[in-house]
Length: 275
Length: 275
DNA sequence: CATGAAATCTCATTATTAGAGATTTCAGAT
DNA sequence: ATCTGAAATCTCTAATAATGAGATTTCATG
Image (cartoon, each protein chain N blue to C red):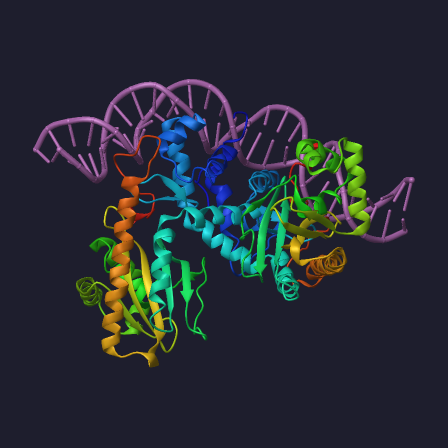
């Protein structure tokens, strides 16, 4: 909790606002973070002036409206979303199911968009909801296409869950399973995230062929046979590939008034070097 | 652009991502902000590690997934939204219209939620979209209930628009009009934001009786008579009042494990003292 | 009008950040 | 494979800006 720049100390405050605790008093924040009173209030002033935090009088602090505004901007701008929306729609037309677009960032999976065509969706993944990292087709569709080193790290970090699912007991064994996913091009999971639901997911790649997202269709297991699954898998894969292609292309055609970076940034997967 | 803490300098970066320019290269940011290269990259590192910025390789920087995640948390937690959703729904049941819940923050109006019951909505205000500050029923429903000083400032800042609408030519004249809104309890606007659309809005108050939001119904002018308008106005007002009441109440009943602030924070309307 | 909690301010001390320039990294060309 | 040039990071000292103890102000409440 120390050795950080003060910049980080400010932003750490935002991380405290979680699903479990969405409201904090200054007093609580002081204790939790160990910041001095004036320091904390200085930080809060900055965050609230930026609109990232607000408070209803009488209550504690909450995330602020600026967040809402930025999400709106993202919904309008995110190329992933723009190219993905059509596919989500199409994929849900053939059978009663849910289609998800999930972003892989740092060490997290986050649902970016979803479309539902069944009347009783067995699970709900609205935009913004985090997804489990160690289970499910989505998770594996990403893992399988990471560079060896990162894949192994991730497997080690989630070894217990992966074992429970029955993907193998040792790391090399599980890596082998991933190779299989890589060959087929999409991942299938039977009830790993939600009981009774089959997930079929394929990765979306960025310009450097790193997986950055996953396109997934989930469907009630009772509605579907192995043959259907492969058919669906092909469709999902084709859609994901198309999104990947469009991502490359949009970059080339964007009429940017200005210097384009010659060397791509890689701000997507932050802590890559930890592997 | 100087004299700020460095904390502010970091967060200013986020403000550059607007509807007009959603993608920035580091080079552009350096020029725009006048930051040194190492400095800028340091800042970017912090922002990207916080997930507030990302970039698809080959493209510039964009707002990051953390924003999506925080908006999700807000959608789940925001008491305004929680208490408002039902009312939005009910208000759209009586006639084909759109109902909006709009947050007033700092010097901005931001749509927080909307529900539509007409098949051809004449205008669209999804969550996150900013609303005009100088026109429309929403704007006036807030302005009318601000402390005199702030009201006057706001009027002065938007005097041209207010004149165009025909609310008066001098500030005192317009203030008088606001008093009228205050007496009636809701504001009506004919085609001020969208031609042909009537807006009817009533304010939501926080624990200190400051307006913090506005509940609004917009309906095609052709569908409605003056009598209807008053009827609707009463409904909107009743709903807004109910939300206000629930906001107070939720505070009292929240089983907060910990110290409640005795003196309310007022982080909502940042620059109040500027008036 | 008084009270006490919450938030802000003051100012000397000290630790942190900034910046110039060298260095490394990396994608794409040869 | 190796080279090339732009992009990103690192190094290290000067100097600026953040820190925190305590005093002070603000403000809702009785």
